Amino acid sequence: MRKLLFESLLKPILTERRPSSDEAAVAELAAAVAHTARKRLGRSLSIREVDAGSSNDSELEIHALNNAFYDVERFGIRFVASPRHADVLLVTGPVTKNMRQALERTFAATPGPKWVVAVGDDALDGGCFAGSYAVAGGVGDVVPVDLHIPGNPPSPTALLKGLLALLDRADAG
Image (tube, rainbow, N blue to C red; front, side, top):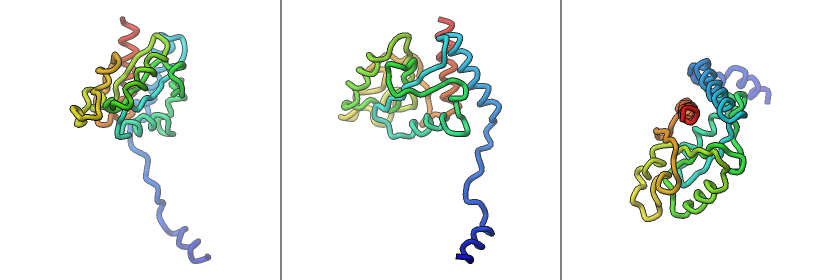
């Protein structure tokens, strides 16, 4: 036991260093999204994430928005469990035939004003799964899409930029 304790004191730390991303730029971007949401909606932005058949790569990046590094909830951007409380539907993946009805019901249950954001290359047109017997198509083939955030998967910074562009567009129009 003493030998293990001594060895653990001499071993280097096993965790990775945090990414050298520009923390100030991310904070500025998230603050801009929060400010625009409050200006447009009068409150913080509520997001419901919908996995319509993705490979979970986009979900990992979306979940990163809530980790200790990005922590978007400090800016009032929050993820909600029900579409009835959402302003934005973040839809990932090609829409599979099994998820088509669930996506349509989620869209119908979201009160207006609402926006749909297709996240990732597969959400645009089905990506490499297009034409498959199990895929109904891209998100735009099932529900109206207001914005597409490209990438495979898009980074958390790209997601924040997309949300800001969505709110700016909604504020202008």
